[in-house]
Every structure is written in structure tokens, then in C-alpha cells.
Length: 439
Image (cartoon, rainbow, N blue to C red; front, side, top):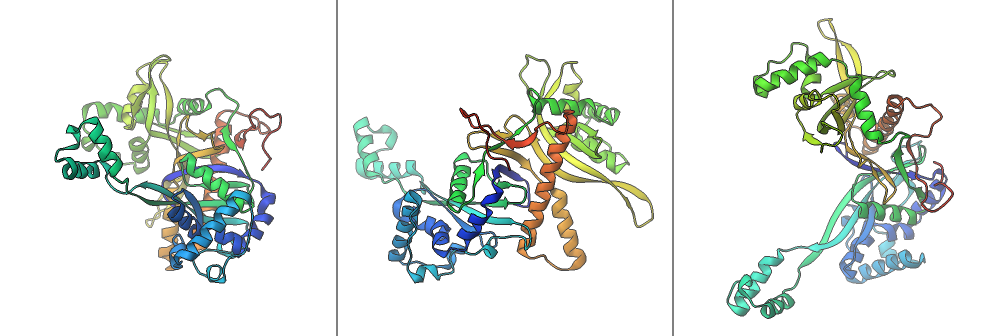
């Protein structure tokens, strides 16, 4: 978190806050939902399991050592609850331990708003050793020849006697829950992991519903990119840089004296100003289609993208990286004024913007570089480091703002009426006449 990453977004039923808060205060239920329990289940049963830790303690489970009997007790309790929802008591030595979080205060990241943060920890059994080398070793010892030179019957013998060494692989991702806006943010693109997180949250009373980016325009991701390109400002400057790139290496191209313009032409191949004051730039990685029937060409260099788009009248952008900026005028120490472009959000815009299998809208390659710079600047100026909850809540606040800006900017580009459903909206349930719950 706090850098470039991928986020899956799903809808959150605001009214489930009460049930969630109640469950957070229940030590028995929280012990069952914890990474402490999930790790015990994975070790003892050899099965995949997902547990949670509070946002402020990503490895909290390591602070409590459990005996084998305690692990067995906790794992069997967690497995029974997941299977039939039964909640029974646990020994005091487990419940009173420090290895799991409980209570609203352990997960709420803002003292007033219903914002929560946690770590979802996935425990999976995976190969912990190089199996081919183990087979090679067994082949040398048992049959005195390399594995490749064994007869099929001998290979089966070696395979049967070579244990597949496995161990628990631990990965964890941050989760943000905003009961005010009605959204859950999961930093993952893994469908299995996202589904496991949604199931784990449901066991704590969190009700979610599937959502997706959707705009009432055919092939709307391409439509947005190409409409933005049609409104490109500084086209002469982009064309000049592309022409220079044909004759000189990148290191040989003379930088412009105008630092703002140099930053634009060196990073982007399109820059458009919207009516709302937001500037939108398009950069690589991108794919350009020269003709309607031609396969798209992958490109990273912005000058090359400009060259390709100028080759034919029918050339268009299939996908690309989008950066939204605000332009701010500042006064330098010398008293002169100059423009500074501040990134609001950066993300990849393509046809993989939704994961419909798990009902999530995606932010791929998402970053808010200016947010990190602002926090570091504040630390330098105040000489005070904010508490951990403030880091999480500030990120969620800016993340919400960025998503809202993206939704409204896309609406403006596609010239949609204000009452038309668009943006991140509930998905319709397949085969049913009703829609998912409203946020």
C-alpha cells in the first residue's frame, strides 16, 4: 500500500456496520477469524486458510505462541464455525492472548468516520523445495543413473518414493472498508484471494455486493482514450518531440527550457484539459491500432506512440496509462510565478478494468504519487510523524477522492447526462430480475 499497486473494489452494504462492530467486540469470533487460527488450520489440516490481523499489526499472530493442543483447539473451533456457523467458547489462555485483534478500536482507522482497515492473510500449501532435483537425487541413489535415463517403470518408482516437500506460503494484503461511501478496497488481482477475503468479511457480518465500472457507450474504455486524444493540447510540441526521436537517441534530445512542457512531452503523448479543470494525460504502456482490422501494437515510448498515431487517419488507442492532474500556480522564492502539475491519480485503462467473476471493479497500476510527497513534506515541515491510523485514513480519503474524480471525468468525456447511471455501479445478478443492493 501507499505506492503503485492494484486494487479490487466491491460494494459494501452500509447497514451491516452494526453487525460488523458487534462481531469485532466478540473475542471468540475474532479468534476464529484471526490469522492465528488460519495459520493453525493450514499447519494441522494442510488446507488453505485466510485470516485477518489489525491494520496496525500485520504480524500480530506471531506475538502469541500456541502449544500443539491449543493450535488443535483453535483450528477445530475455526473450522466448525466456518462449516456450520456454530460459535462455542475457547480456553481462556487462547482468548486472553495478544496474537489477535478484537474490538472496534483495533480496526477503525478514523476516530469519527466508519472507516476500517485490516490485513487479510492467505495461507496456502505450496512446494517448498525443488522437486526435480529431489527426483534426480533419488534416481542417483536408487538406480545409479540420471532421472531422464530411467525406464517408465523406474520413473514411477522414484516418483512414488520422492516426497513432495510442501510448506505453508503466507501472503497478505491490506483491506479498506468505508461504510460511509459503501465500498471495500482489496489490494489484489488474485480472484481466489479476493473471493476468500469477501467470504472472511461476510463471517464477520460485512455484507458486500458485486460492482463494476460501466458506462453506457460501446467499447467505452477505447472511446474515452480516443476522445481524450482528439482533444489533445500541445499537439505541435508532441509532434516535434516525436520527430526528434526519429533522428536522435533519447539522451541526445535537448530538453526544453520550459520545465512544465518538458515533463509533458517526455512522459505523455496526449494531454487534455477537461471543463472541470482536470488535466488528463495518456502514456505508455499503451497499444495502438493503425487500422480497424489491424492487430494493436504495444508501445511504451510516448514519442513512438505519437509517430504511430500519425501514420494513418484511422489510427486509434486501444489501451494506455492515464494520469489525472491538477495545475497549480505557485510563487518561487524569487517572486516569479510558475505552474506545477500535481498528479491526482495514475492507472491503466483497458478492457481488464473489471473482474466480473468475483464482482469487483479494478484499479490496475494505480498510484497517487503526490499524496506520498505531501505526507513527506508535512513531516519535514512539522518534524512530526503522523500516527499509523492517520497514514491509513489519509490514504483512504485520497483514494475515495481519486475514484470520484475518475468517475466524473469519464462521464464528462463521454458527455453523459448527470442522471445516467455510470461509474462504479452495482452489477445485475445473472438470471434474476432484481439488481444488487444499492450502496
